[in-house]
Length: 307
Image (cartoon, rainbow, N blue to C red; front, side, top):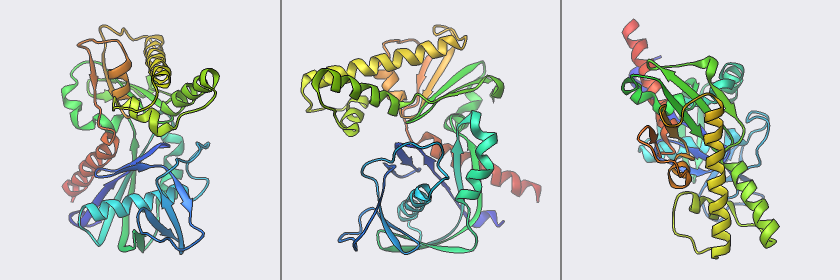
């Protein structure tokens, strides 16, 4: 591998959002049955046009059982190539998996994302010629804080609240403690489902996930107050459950340094009702994608030093 000519592209494959260093879009794939009138968000795979974004995919057991995440990966690469002003590139594709499923799923995910030779990725009617030098997969949650590990002198609990999972990973002396890391399938999607169940019970109808996400981020909403109250109460209940889970794992909420990352970090700050100097929030939802690129750069540098 000629490390000097490798472009690193990190992708965080969430069930709700696809994140790269320069792009965020909804994890949605729609097969186009007619020629698209506009090129926006259109990617081609095997000669077939797909629109990405829009309504998100339903959560499945894994991400490798169909071609949806291949399509989303191509769109993410196309977006990054466009943002970086590139038409051709040799890339190192960097991605991630939950810490506790990392060992079991790493090989399959690498195989799923890999290809041989030069591929033409057509995104928004622009063609990008891309060869794949390597696929690297890292533990999510760890990647989000990798660039600041040197500041964690004592024990730190990193809580990555994503769309589908919550990862709780203790770090001691700048190293993750794998045996005490856990992954819980109770992320923000389950929170939104619970909120809509309550909306149906009290109001007889649902609100869209996009509208709930706006409230999650603290943005102004034109929803009726009665719906806003249900959403906010649901978010407060979600944050309390997260804190109870951390406490059940044996951590003192008042003395343990806790770092919230992922899409749920802003939810914990806005609705957690537990303000303390020992709690930190990394609200950049692209932190894992950027972390995958950071860890990949370290890998390439180590390869160079061995030559």
